[in-house]
Image (cartoon, rainbow, N blue to C red; front, side):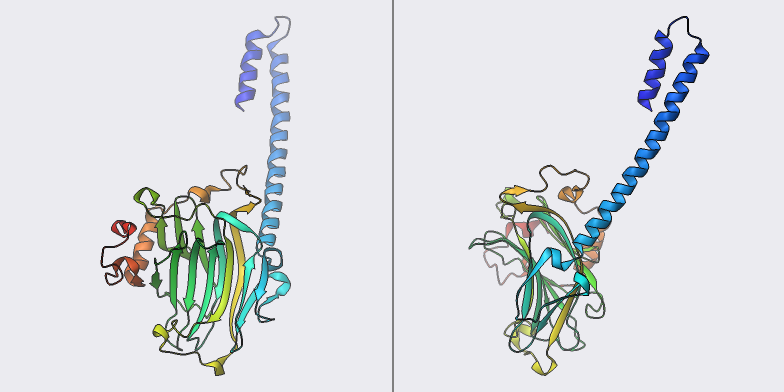
Length: 322
């Protein structure tokens, strides 16, 4: 529109004397009508392309055949419903697991999980990002099984350069075995945010300026596994797995990744639209901060930053900002 108005002004200022103003305005009106129609057509085409791309992205993002490989379990892991559902199972002989085909260097990952129902004591369902090597980086969701009627424990941890010891644990405000719920890991250069159904439960900031290692240089894959950990998972190993309840099964659906895929040393975000990758600078707004504090107050059951027995010489630097 600014272009058309500028053109009209210049035309009036410089128009030849032998042309009538009526002729000039008629020409400009026709130009405006033509450009308006073209703009409308372009808008419709852009909307159509946007919807088409979005539908293709959703289809691709939610198909486990496209994005994941089953890595172990000897048939205990299954992809079902034309790639829309994935299940992991555990029995006394073995658990099972899968991993993403892509590696990522920064990502916002969503996955819907429905955890092992009933007496799941001794079992662990792990869903995490991890790099390779002896000085690996890792961002963990782990769901520690329970006796029937007792709540699951959601265990979180962050590793950088092979060192973790940053555990925080939570109860959930719903039954995670009754239905699917969305578990999100946001990992960008500034922070890591763990969320459940859109509610943030934990934030780990990049505090390299204070000497705190932060995972930012090593690409990571998505992994998940269901395995037996009855030596520690439930009440510190006091409650053992009841194998008469096996097989234990966890289910996955609606995977979605807004992510910088990493291939041959090159990030897919190098030339991507900044609006599409707004999560790369995402942070908690005031409402999200309030929700985070609500979770910490009502559902956090362990925080390494308050465990003086583990850190007799003083807490890690990031704990002073919690």
